Image (tube, rainbow, N blue to C red; front, side, top):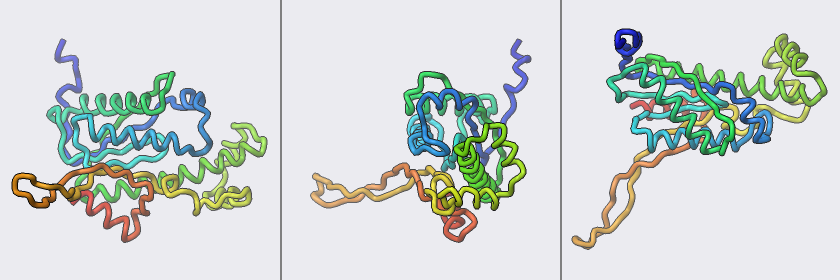
Length: 241
């Protein structure tokens, strides 16, 4: 029967990204009474789940980018002999469990998963694409809940937004008191999670001298720059170098 495991020999070789997306979140999250369209508690739970993955999964992502219920993890190396079945099952399973713990959920949640082969030169273009989607999601989410507050039904809101340009939604939300250009950066630009090396001062009691040891910490960047700017490009270059 082993030959019927039709994808067991399918492999992918680094570098690549693994993107996971929340599936069926609405019912479970509605029970938490989260703010709409954005709730920092949920965003922090997503970022913390990624940080737990960095610390405890045994895998070694270079960095990750998350917005809404989506996470992209970037790998330059992979365990499990690069087997697609392993990668596409273990990563979403781990994050699902971590998020359930972070939010103390009573109903189960899950993520789907896909692998995106990337050359090193492709990573920046991939991030531009996902950050553009972050902004589109930001605009449409504010538009949706702004219209919903006016008394329209969900179907009516969806139909109206379908025929509106992003600039028109932006203006609509502005008329109702929210400037989308001034919302928190994590809503507009997403959140980066990565490892950073730093020097930790210490003392050698045998030699009786001050010493410095190199350590690694995990950074959650909630003020992620716009990647198409010089600062954004430099940051991504630093992460993948």
